[in-house]
Length: 184
Image (cartoon, rainbow, N blue to C red; front, side, top):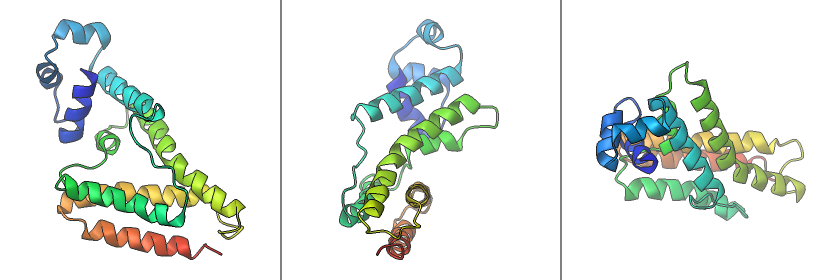
């Protein structure tokens, strides 16, 4: 039920996906749903928890970036994925996050945790490059990681909306040029 909900939330968003649609697609009854979840928010929380657990267990790939070339390839991997799926989706967690209302604080915390985990490979890379002297000593590795992660998230959304990758590709090139300005 949870993995089916993730797929449907990714395809349609949380507002456009009803509990009944999740139940039908997962061949699950309402009694099972209410046994495990109080409401739809409980299901969304379970979806995010399972996603995070799978991420930590390595079942969802997060690239460990070891070189400047791999940083470029990191951006390219998201662009290539968008092309492969015909620009029909953005980030599954970002899609859920975009639908949250102001009273969904628990879900917002779930998403922040996932995003922090995903961003950590970038922070680790920039920290290693700074320690090696390949980045200016005043560079903030976490700020650069947030910058790259935000470009990636925005690029996924914009390419979904525009149904093409030109804007995302341009933003990635500009991001890499900006980061190059911090390199020694």
